[in-house]
Length: 111
Image (cartoon, rainbow, N blue to C red):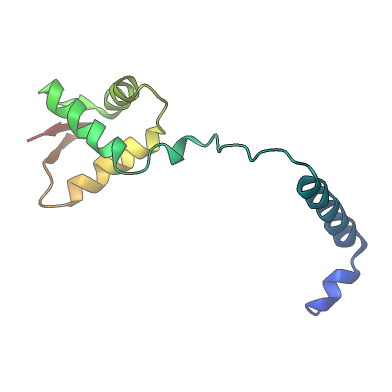
């Protein structure tokens, strides 16, 4: 089917009509734009990495990833994806100039 042939599909035509109607209603309303509720917008600017370093520095001892994650959330006062903490720690271990050391599986400390 060619590129233009997809527009002859009745299902796609109906969905495009619904989308067009929804956009028309949105434009016609005078509603103020809603702020984004996504958490990750608040986490930009290196807030999480700085919090992880602070938590590891304050601990002064090896920590498990889940404990680091819990402390980071408590420190920031907001939820943080556990994958953000885990991925940042894993990335730091690979960097030779990093101050983070992996002692064993899932345990890290700051030098």
